[in-house]
Image (cartoon, rainbow, N blue to C red; front, side, top):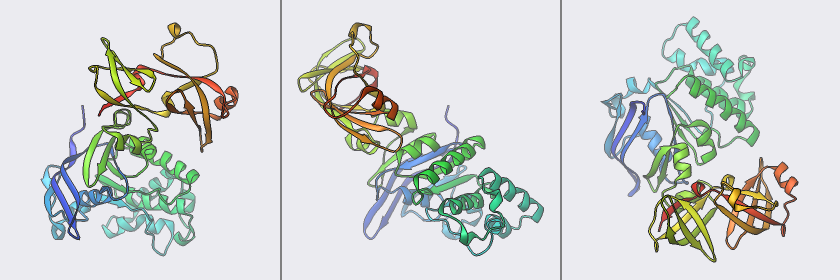
Length: 363
């Protein structure tokens, strides 16, 4: 059962320069969970975050906070003090790391012993306790981002808003910060709204994923559900699904159906009627490659195709292999697997995937 919503938006519309930037019929943020807002540039992610955080008033509609209407901007101070926002670029001022992290508490009149206790806890949790006395102007990008997060977390906000806080960081720094922040958010059950364009970041941090396109929400749900079942081709491509195969249903069984793709047939779990046009989606991690002789009768994978390796691309943590099986499949393998199979262009292999791994979109 989902947690009760702490924030709700209804009929929210934002227009700027005569153009609609946001048109949200209904949206809610469950308490104690992290919700990721994803979409391409210009989708409306940051605009929605600003409206939810009370930083921008919509032209139409409104936001409820704990069931009560969020006041208009001039009357919003009390509600804003119960939230915190971390922006894309850390906004630190002259002074030490400690003074930056403590600044919000000082503005709110919190007593010094409590300030010291909260700041010490936050700096320790984010791995920067040793930097407390250092000037904020001498910090690296990753260290500055951690200080910015500490300054927000010491306020103990009822909702934490994060607007692409990792976008300017290098890969190793980003990886470490995401790991530590994920542990904090889940360990403390902090309610958070997180804007990103990277599905991988969303999966690491969030419980729920909300896809925006052209200012509107086009799909939402638990992260794994959205990743496995994109609603259309555009969302599938945005979520990193590279294998997209068009075909026609040629036969149906009790719990599966067959789709002809070119000269091959692919088995898909589910139900469909012969003659229906389908777009088949396969994630790269669901495709296995082998060079061993195969007996389909003894395999759990219902789809087995002989093919030829067309390309081998080295990525940060994996290798992306494209295989021509009469249609092109894109698989993700570890370096060890690639070396063990001797995968190079021209190598003959078998590609395997389960009927349940295929997501079919009616065209």
